[in-house]
Image (cartoon, rainbow, N blue to C red; front, top):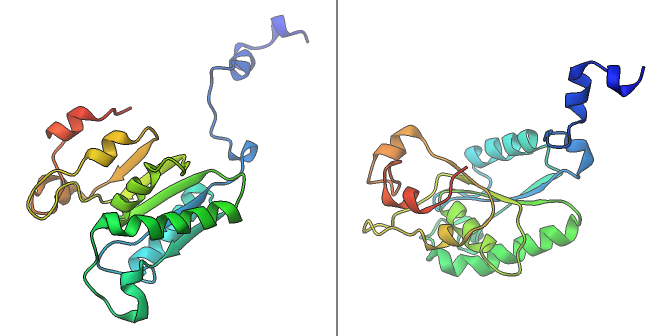
Length: 186
C-alpha cells in the first residue's frame, strides 16, 4: 500500500511536530536530591521520595547526600544556603562525572530546593531541570528571595502543599503574588 492511501492516523504519527515521551531514545536521567534543613537524607520522607523520583523519572540513579552540618549524626542549625552551594556543587560534579551522557536533574526538599536552584544557576553546571519539593520563597523576616529563580533558564517544577500556598508563615506565596507575575510559566 502506498503512502497516499494510508489511513490518516498513520500519517499523523509520522508528523515531525508530535512530541512523544519515549524515554528509550535518550539515556535515563541522573538525579541529585538534597534534603531540607530539618532531616537528613536517611529520613523516611527522603527515602520515600527518592524511590518515587527514581520510578517516575526512570532515573539511572537518585543520589542523596547530607550537608556537612549533619555530620556526626548530630543535628545542628543549618548555615545560610549560600554556604552550602560549594559542597552541593561538588556532589553534582562528582555525579555528572560518574554518569556521563545522562541528563542531570536537581531536586530538593525546602532548603535543599533553594540550594539546588542556586547550584543550577552556576555557570559551570548544566542541569536539564529542577524539582522543588517545597521552596522557601520568603525568609524568616518575610523578605522575598526570588533572585535565583529569576536567573534560571531551565524548567523548574514546584510542588507545594495546598496549606503552604495559603500561609504566609511558611515562606510561600499565593498565585497572585508579585513573584509569580515576574517568572515565566508554561
